[in-house]
Structure formats: structure tokens, C-alpha cells
Length: 111
Length: 116
Image 1 (spheres, each protein chain N blue to C red):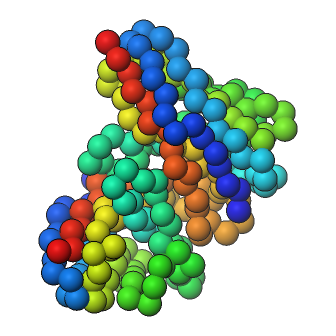
Image 2: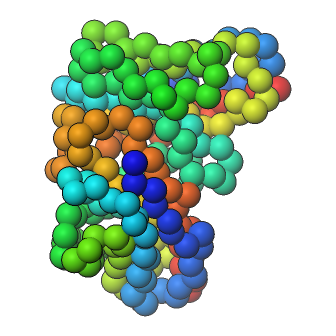
């Protein structure tokens, strides 16, 4: 099972671009990389998913290098409402049980 | 459409009592997960159901914890003889199918359990 490592916390200011990197050295060939966002008193919410190279949607971009041992979530021009905990999840191949979430990165956006 | 629904949203119980937590997944979702989140911590996997297959119970912390999924839909997580260390938010998630590509997890807002 692929274990993930993320920074515990990050600080940023409104309008800046934020990049959060997740390490997953033992990612399996068929694993996907998915990022979730969690606000207090809510369950995590899907942000973006990718397998390799770059994926972009309306809220974020996901950069995955060729070796896939890490991934970087990029949030353009953050606002106060982006203050949340961000989780990187690696899995999705073979048995879907026991999907392991890391401890997440607490992003604090300041005015 | 309706998302994942969990009830109750809050539960306070006395040490030693049994509790049942309920999860209504999104209709048609075949995969269902339970996670536990202690204050300020990440998500701890508890159990996974997929269709009619035997559940993956590898994350259950003790034999006081059990879960059922009836008719492939509603799931109940039961904690017997609750202890103070069981206090946490219990999150349920579902996904449309076994393969998670393009079918990410959809979480409920959890049940906050407090054992006094």
C-alpha cells in the first residue's frame, strides 16, 4: 500500500499561488493520485485526480513527474475560503479496500 | 442529487454503552467506506464494503467495532462497550464502482461521537 507524506501545514496570503507536494515513493503501477479538501465539521471533498503529467480543472492543477513518486497540487490565486486541510490519496488499483489517507496539509490563507 | 447522509450528526454516550451509527450512501454506489477522524488528526480507515463481496475489516481497531451493510445500501457501524478513546468523528464515504478512476469518494459530514 502506497504511503503518502505531506507537509503538516502551510501559510499563504490571498491572491498567491500555493503548491502542496505529496511524496508517495512506493506508488503502484495502476494507482491513481487523488486530492481532497476538508473544511471543519465537513467530510473531505474531491478536488482533482491524475495518473501522470498534468491535469487541470476549474479549481486546481495537479503535476505528476515521470517517476510518479510525488505529486504537486497547485491552487491558483488562493482566497480566504481555501483555508482547509488538503489530503493526498494514492490508490485505486486492484483491491479498493484500505485506502490510506495521509495526515494532510493544513493550509492557512491570510488576508 | 442527495449526497451521503449520516445520522445522528452528534452522539453523546456514557462509557460502556453501545452505539449505532448509520450511513446512507448515494443511490447506486456499490462501494462504501467507514473512516474515523480524531480531533486534529487524519482519516483512519476502518472498513470497506464492495457489492456482495466480503468486507475488508482490516482497519477495525478492536472486536468492539463491527459494521453491516444491508441490501447493498445502508450501512451501520456499531461500537460496543464504548470507551473514551472512541470519541471521534466517524465518516462514511461511497463511490460508484470499485475502480476509483473517475469515481472518487463522496463523503458524508460524519457523526461526532463523544463518550463521557
